[in-house]
Length: 224
Image (tube, rainbow, N blue to C red; front, side):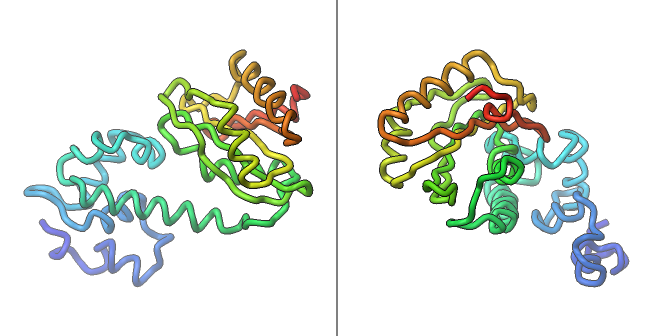
């Protein structure tokens, strides 16, 4: 039975309008975004199947584009709607830390990085560029890799640091595996970059690894 034939109170769109978006399930919210189903399945059926198959929103939206677009009933148009909605949500949450605000507390930096790096399916290496008073100048994702690693080029970090006239920066990368524990290579890379940036008077104040709900700070661990 198509959703339009359901009782009004059970239809996701009407439920959102009457009760508010917080009362909808994850599958109902996805159904609103993908709008239509396929023969024999409603948009809500498709949404439920996606969540059952992958177990969570994070795993679902972490899929490679081709994988998600090839799911029955989706395709390029619906994929772009889903990703646009996800990106809007990220940008909405990120607005609580604005350019010029101070990032001198590790917990705040971790929350900032969680919104930007935790959901990436592949490893991403980024930098938070700051002035001498720890005020945010810019955040940039500089290197994108595979699910296991990303190739890092200190020269590019130096170039971007000088471009932003940064005095301090925080290195950051995610571990798609979900575990935030640093590898020996992570430690070696951190000290290599720190020494390189010291030559141009840019201070690396921390390197934070982002996992799934967990973090590792080189500064907190006394490794910087």
